[in-house]
Each structure stands twice: as C-alpha cells, then as structure tokens.
Amino acid sequence: MPLCADFIKKVFHFGFDARTSRGRMKDKSSWFIKLWDVENPAVFGLGECGPLPGLSVDDRPDFEGVLSQCIERVPTLQSLKDIEKIVPPGFPSIRFGLETALLDLQNGGLRKIYTNPFVSGIPIPINGLVWMGDLDSMLQQVSIKIASGFRCIKIKVGGLNFEKECDILQYIRSKYFRESITIRLDANGAFKPEEAIHKLNTLSRFNIHSIEQPVKPGLGLMEELCEKSPIPIALDEELIGVEAKADRIKLLDRIKPQFIILKPTLHGGLVSCAEWISLAEERSIGWWITSALESNIGLNAICQFTANYETTLPQGLGTGQIYEDNIRSPLTVSDGMIFYDQKRIWDLQELG
Image (cartoon, rainbow, N blue to C red; front, top):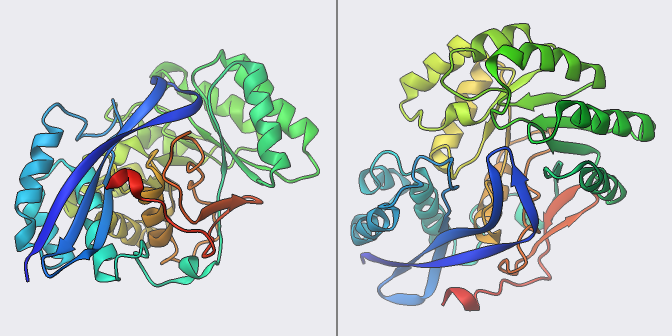
C-alpha cells in the first residue's frame, strides 16, 4: 500500500548562550516528518529536517513550501533510491529527514534506524564541545568537560582575541598534561586568508589534533593550507552543496585534506555521507561524523549511522544536551561516550 506523510515544526531553545564565529543562537527550528502505511497508521517512522540558519544551502524562505511538495510525493516512495526523485537538489536536510523516517518505518517504527551495536548499548566515543564565550566561560567549560570524562575536547575559535584563545590552549596543556587530552579546533572559516598560515603555525605549539575549516570555503586557499599547515586540516563547510560524485572526487583530489567532517543534515543525508566516506577512504583521508544541532530524533539517527562503521576517532555527537526542551530519548552521555540506554523511553507527545 502507498505511504502517507505529514510534518510538524518545532522550535528548540538553547539552555545557554550558544555562540559561534557566525554569531549567537537563542533557538533552532526543526521540521519532523512522520511517515506511515495507510493500513497501519499506529506504526510510523520519524525523521528530522533541521537546516542551520546562515549555513545550510536549504536555509531559505521557501523551505517549508518545498517540504510540503516533497510530502505530497511520498505515496510514490518505496526505497531510499526514490528519495532522490522526490527531493530536489539543494535540500539535504529534507533528504536526511525522509531517509530517517523511511528507515525507521521499515524497522518497525521504534526509532531504531539500523541494527548495529549502538542500539544494543555499545557506546561511541565523542568529543566534548566548548562553545565560544569570554575567557572565564570557556575555561570553565573545559574544566567541566574534562571532569565529566571527556578526553577529546573540541574548541570553537575565531570569536575571541587570538591571544586569549592561545591562553586557553596553554591553560589546557599546562593543567591537564597528565590526562593526555586531545584538542580539536573549529574555526568555522573565521581566519582571514592573509593571517591563516601564521595562526596555524602559532596554534601548532599546543599539539592540536586538527582544525576544521580555518578559512571560508571557495577562496581557493584551502589546497595551499592543507599542503603547508603544521596542523592537519579538516574540511567541513567546504563540502556543503557539492552533490555530484564527480565534483566530490575533484574537490578531494584537488585540496587533499587530512580529514573531512560529515553532517548528514548539511552534506546530503545518509546515503550521501556514505558516498563521501567511501571516496575519503579510497584516498586515505580520515573522517568523522558531527551532528548539526539536531534534536534527539536527528542525533539518534546520526549515531546509529555512525555505528555502521568501525572507527576509533571520537565523533562529534555530544549535542543532545544543548536544548532545555529537547525530546526525551534513550540517548545518554557519560564518561566521554554516547550510548543508547534501552531502559529509557522516547517521549514523542509534543510531535503528535
């Protein structure tokens, strides 16, 4: 029988002052797709579409109208391959939402998108994210993360005075030298082209694991930085909007990054991210998965997708606690790990 679908919009509110180099965020909107079979409406799949304001290619005024058009085409949906026909190019978060909803429905509508070790309780190591703030605020965040068991810390840079950001790194290295803390940086493209190499050389003194997107994408500078930087560079925003496989191959072969960071909401969905991973591994390029401020619905799907792969790198999946009104779920973070606690249940009352 043909499938039916609907969607509902929900606004989530940050429980703290969330700042990046692109500015402050007080709340974040997501659209949830509900997918069911006409003959059995009690069993349904859920998927989340949550474009990031100012960053996603599908953060545009007609987003909800396009989503409505996609929902109207759902009766023709039979497999993941059909989603490419239903969702037009340039709407990666809708693809991710439909993929998740369909996989959830096909697996019984229990929010178990895949059958893998994660849903059985095997945890995934994650990094602890330190948001931008004043010096004291960021130092406090670092202390809390490390005290909570995180051994990989990701720090957003580019929003403070550069010397103060170096002070934070010096503080971590001097105070926690016994804990062997791994430090990742995320510049969100904040470095000016003329200062990027100097800053990378300076930051390398602090034994940095990697830095995400030091300069804005499309400047033609990333190839040189990946070649000359003493710190391994990870592409993030550089991957947004690159949909054709041939274009992805050209990008990776030209820039030759050390890592790529994948966000299904931004980078085309689950099938698309699987292709990015395959292309990266063929070129010995490292990768990890990061959530993009989704609620626990989207985060759950990303965690389960990640668990399909064998990787020892900490993933960027620790954003489930950022909202004061998040959807209650079995997702639990403890000792620098995220895991699926089967003793906890989903509370989906707000989604109808």
